[in-house]
Length: 512
Image 1 (cartoon, rainbow, N blue to C red):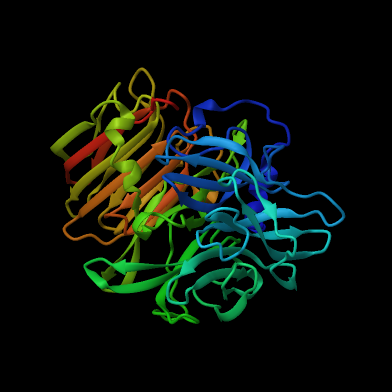
Image 2 (image 1 turned 90 degrees about the vertical axis):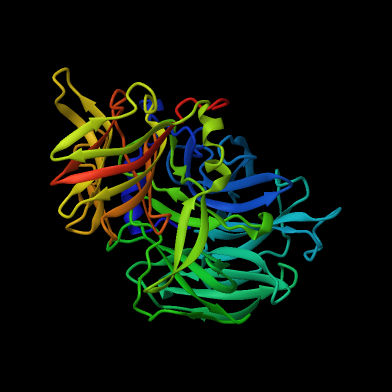
């Protein structure tokens, strides 16, 4: 991926030399590099029980530049082994930066690169600024992904274009070939290619423009999912990132059919389907080669104007993907992956704080889990709430009060029944820098009988909110003071019932 106009502010806001360490904002259960800059996830591959996460990384500085492929591995998507740079930039007369891409397990040695059994092949964009060109390169690894050899006949696809990037490749059973989607950003077009060997590629078709087109398209991914409740009904999903002045950080998706050559969108070309309603989720792609072809998706949580040191950038919580049928058509759902969620008590080391059937009437705020589940501003909260008409209810997180119980800082997550929207209000979130036009973010949200289900993941400086079993998601950042760790439930305008509430403290995960 290439940083576009709306990210220019972010990049330039990070100082060249790290000044003040900010350990209070380093996430516990989200991936961050040990130091320096990171952005897009790349080359996601599950192999022999291990999740490989490659990522865009600057090996030298805490700002964007010198783009190379960093590498980390994990068995549980929480504890990460940070490894050496896998595919470094090349500085020569052309200067080749290693931009975003994907990795596959070539188990049948279709490429001819594998020494014994299969091998890993990475497919990525080579950005050559001196040539004003982007083209698609491949590299292969015979040591489990630790080091890579670039193919001697690179590039494998070259359109002689300045902007042509982010190939995402997977095996397609229908074609019995490799399938690539790759972006032509300024054309708002995704090209589809096939290959028998990862070296020679045939153009199949192109999709776009459609949906949101007020920013360049990049970082595509393409995969099939079964529709919930109908095991025989499969749909294809095309995901595209587009960052610019109109929507800022934005991702959209399309649902449709793929006949082995062409993708057909189910919806009208002007329908825009957001992946995430926040200002922080970008460049997400799924892991390849997962058991039962389960789609686990992870994205870059984009840093805002607040500096963090000695690192900048983190990944989202990995998300399990699915499709459901709605009145508007087939829609994507995203939930925190069961790989992590099924182990929350083990990760926490204790049972969650649990509250059931608590009723709040009138203008009221009740502190919960005091001195237990939120002491480190790293927790996982699930809740079911029922609100009367006219009620606004929800949670106040990262809260700080004075000795007289006056609120000094807080981030408010609430559901407004009258407006039919869920909101995140960071206008009083503390001293951390937040862009003024993003202080309040909303999700349009109709409810039946005022019922909503929330899953709130606060991890030091990241905030992800999953609504109604992942039908809608909002990802953003918060930068609370170290002692701003209060957690409260609130209601105004009538009666709200907290049917169920669980909070897992994840501030002290063993091995982190």
